[in-house]
Image (tube, rainbow, N blue to C red):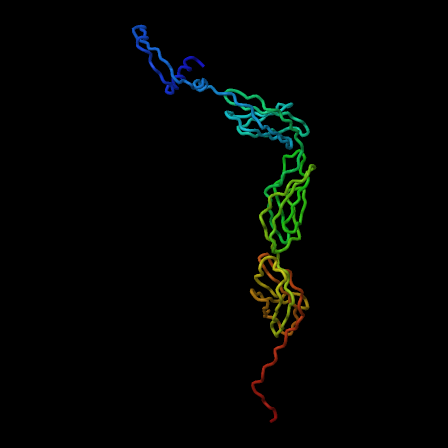
Length: 339
């Protein structure tokens, strides 16, 4: 720092100083001008404040090293006046520079021991190195898979997730598990199907990843899904034939598939050929009449239930039943021949 700069800095702090002039008798003349000696009172500012100098930071303390898979993670206590920190490793001279009190050095060799130190840095220089720590990276089991989701089809759920990567020991399998029921599926790829789920039940799913070292913790559960399926078939079909129609009634299915039944369909088939002939459809009831049938014809009937997923399997066959004859009408008049 030049003398001129020192003087300018010193002048900038004169407001903190108290100046007093000596007696005029002590004044002297030089080049026709009077110069008065001055005394400075209470000038107690440290030199580095006056000159604007900085101090080298102290040595970091509480230096901790944690081994990871092909990496090491370090932390330490904050040092006053430090603007950054540098962690250095031997024997490979790897390092990391950070503004905070933690950093990770990656690309290390599993099974190799490294000696690490940390220094604090500012504009005045570097601190002394911290106490050394030894760390040996090791292969690790996977982290939990992320972004687990599921979709339903019938009584099945397809579960998907993001693959776990970046390990020295790659993932060999994933396992998805349902809650409730603890039903599982296992796959080498990031998707699998869980079957035999129950209609009307809400499920969530978690996933684990496994490699040669071990198995990850469970993932965060997926969003809940409710299993929906077609209804079961109606039962106890009863037929009541008339000359040109058949009245049909039935019992509701044991299961609606997790979605309310919105209608039923009863279909009449020719008993001789099995060809469908006519049907009736109804909502909110368990009976309807199939009209438009032929007299004195044999029919069988099957009934299906419907919900938002679709139609159930047709019920067991009811019948055959024979539609009746229409009786002849009453004669309008009687003529007696030969009377």
